[in-house]
Image (cartoon, rainbow, N blue to C red; front, top):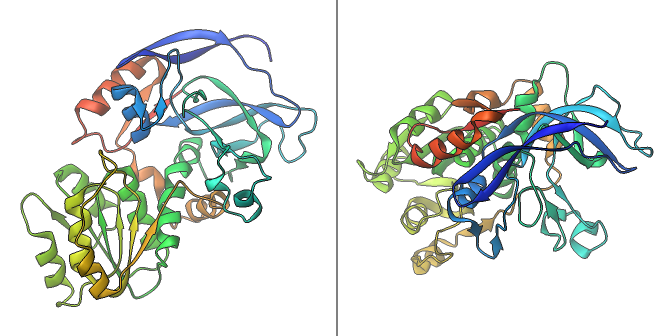
Length: 347
């Protein structure tokens, strides 16, 4: 398909412009997707606001966005699993397939992954994108392409719940009620966890957690989260927790409120990359710590959960913006985190 498309290009710190670029051409094992929705991720906001995440540094011009859903409009000559008209969710990371991690099934740990919107790889805040056909997952008729775009963050929440051994009869706590905290909540409930409590300091996010199925919420600025969890569990503590806030305070609180022998799953990155924690308490309780880096082998499961209505992922969205509004959308998302829980761009 020849032609020109709109593309949102980051030209500097907190500067994004919508410009025209040629529509890309799919290689033999790729498909061309008409992008319909792209979620605004926390990593997009970090790159937009600071120009870097750790050692990954934006060198403009650069395209943000990696949570995408759309429609296949052209297929490469070797593609057999997809056809024009298929609606798909795009898994954004292409791995080498030959390293020890790929071969063992832990492909999310591949050192040579090429991931949308991770410098120097451009993302998909644009009208069309080419992607490996094997990483484009068809969605059923009862799902929308906006839901397809939200499969990516949901995959993180499901991976966290699986890492923690979530199951029926447990009591769990999630710290942080941003997008990843909320999808973790939804994943835990879908996997049968009996009670899930959510801790945050932003009231609108806590109200969204209640809407999405939380059994109780705690405003950590107003209440002692540890005391409240111990009250709700009759002094027993929780069986499982997922930490998405990335702070020393919340991680310490989880160590204090955990039941002996239980598991803490660390998902959120701290601003400094370092935490000082009460390790002696963790040792006394023989706690298990698990960590999360993206996800692996989750997309089919996530799509099935949404298609069957077990996870109402679209309910996480609080704001929808047009592509032409992307500069304002990113700026609002940075400045108004208390109200914009999850924004998406309609392409």
